[in-house]
Image (cartoon, rainbow, N blue to C red; front, top):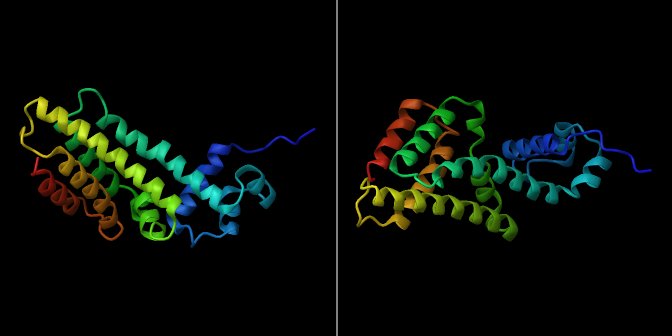
Length: 193
């Protein structure tokens, strides 16, 4: 009879994701993962495969937990300019008020560390960024229809800009978590709307 697992897969996956997020892929050893997850080597390999498989699953976990939550409001049927502004105000609030903000964005960290030489990581990060762009396009198109954005505005270019702004804020926050500074950046950038 097979031995039952004595841990919650999602809980230990969350711990692995946080470890990769803080230390990077290359900076995280299997021993670091075992310690953070509270697993022995056999359980880790039986459940997740190797370090790389676990890492890719951690990216998917982040996508489902963090990215999907952020995108959901932007994809709401009536999302428009107010939702975009609220998205960035909420982002500033989280970045200025969380120690986790110093970790940066997991997706951005992966892009910087791996995407030049890891095609699978690059593909996943690109898909995630494209999801954000599409969500912004949706909200911007609604904003045009609601009369809150010029009909001549290039929503695709604005969506790309907003995605870059979002990622840039997370990079800046690794060095500067002053709420006033972050608010100035956001207010100046959103003036284009």
